[in-house]
Amino acid sequence: MKNSIDLTHAKKQFENYLSDYDIEDPKIHLKVTHTYRVMEVCRTLATALSFDEEGINLATLIGLLHDIGRFEQLRLTNSFDDSIIPHAKCSLDVLFTQGYIHKFVENPMYDDIIYESIKNHGLFQIDSSLEGDCLLYAKLIRDADKLDNFHTKLIEEIDTMLDVDMDNLAKETISDYAYETFLAHKPLENSKRKTHLDMWLSYIAYIYDLNFQASFCYTKEHDYANRLFARIPYKHPDTISKIKTLQNCMNSFILLKTENTKTD
Image (cartoon, rainbow, N blue to C red; front, side, top):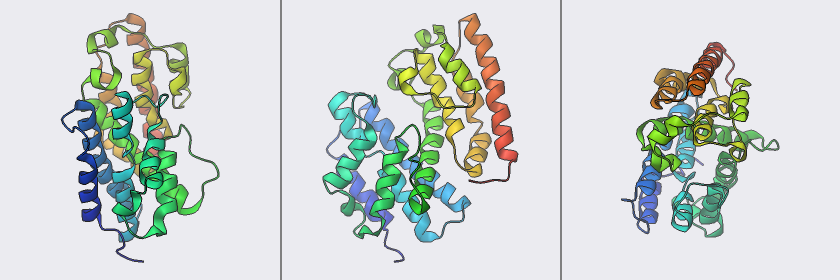
């Protein structure tokens, strides 16, 4: 069915949903602005992947809905810590348990794709059993979410994101786990991070989990890796040395991925 997704209507419903939350709260505001940017990145990637108009609208809608559970997570915990309450689970509860999904899009034809996309965007690794459109859109929202996370990490206050001020963050060191995993071109597991600087490094390592060449090109175009590395004024000599090595490692990886013609 063509034109079954009305994005203007969906955005209005999103604004209505937000009326129950304090959008002046820095953490709430962060996720509102993140949501709208992810919508645009979804549109950009879907266009680059030659989706038709309905497919682009579906990708954009998933971008709008992917983090809707963050607001309830923050209300309950005042934290983005998924080890307390996974935000993707909160999103699925709001949309599918509480039934909000059909306030955003009446037709249920895309329910499975939306459900699996939101469920998998919050997982460390994508479900290996996914296939077809569920897999395609899950990959797309994972990439779009990460691409805007890079932008977010460059503009938001460090203490809002990491619960530590910049001065103390700059004095920290990188754990052996974080250093070795990053050099192996692998994303970092949240539970194995030891320092706030490990957390920061894990955000940059999202690049290792991107799915599409268009996503790597977007990352390179915005120079996210180098800008993220440069944001922290590292103080510890060992950290300064390690950061140089990790930055070179990441730049080589991005160059390889942007020169490769494979897109999936």
